[in-house]
Image 1: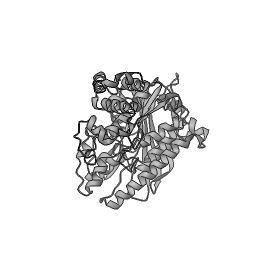
Image 2: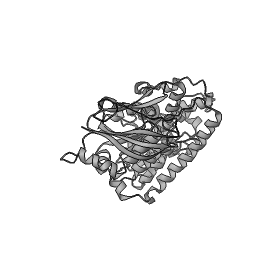
Image 3: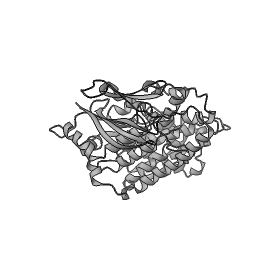
Image 4: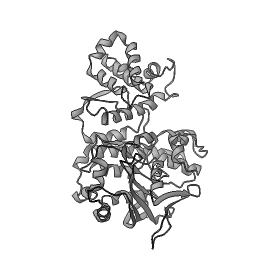
Length: 448
């Protein structure tokens, strides 16, 4: 597929083939579309080749959403971009595929191709000049479309509102802009933020396992839009249906059409998840060339077969957390039409409870969370699941990973003689005060 896309595009520009072939930018683009990252998507391949060819030939001002729709997606000349978002949808996919390619197969390329947010004109960056700070800010930007004022959104864990108003939608979008601005600031200046050395080394064996090997590590924040859809429809969405895109078919009679479309199509996540990701990016072991931030709607099972993954959020906001259920003693389930979340203890030890429940509807309450270190789908890599019964629980789990007094004793017990880690699970308890975690403690562990 990738090779045929190159031939097709060169045929359309036969008069300038010599010009294109002599340009290093074109050669990089050709190698990208011939890779496995583009092999099954001729439309994405043609999209990339079109905008690169137009740029090389000095016609970058003509690279517009409408022109791409006409020349790449065979839309009629009079089609309306406001009514047909195919270019915006594919642009988001193209940005992600390019990121994956230059992290993996194209890691040795001299130039990296980027498509800045807000347009479709490609930029070409010297691979040696890229900084790790850019990886965090670009991850935030990649969750937006050129025609959208919203970016990474909130909230994360179950939200228990029975009504959805336009005022809430407006506040959600306004909060989104603030969150993305904060994420950009964190990414740009994170190297100057003071971080306690003990925090960075608290879970060193764990971070070595996830970031220092040869595997790519996917970092997957929660899909808060899905969580809202489930709350409104009172129906949990299992992983198989989620991967199939069934969230786009959910009926949301209480929500106005515009807001319903946003929930079905936009990438909403939580500020707590951003805080966890920011902390991960400051770890000494963090390698931006092998770490990929991936929204859960865009993740695929094939991605995880030969990779590590850090999954943030419970199955109610991130169905990928369900990958660990068959291997774990502790797991989170939702009951009563998404009205209650429970941690089930499959094999309780003496003194343990069979279930742990959070009374989320009280301003101050006890909540619970899980940290699970389990085998990946392929068996060679690792899954790290960080999840809570509510947003405070997820926050507690994320912070526990950086607290030496909580995490180091468990990792010492899980350490093998060769320095590798056994699989383990940690059950945490915390107090939630206005959705903020405090007083986190370990109440049970399993080491395998």
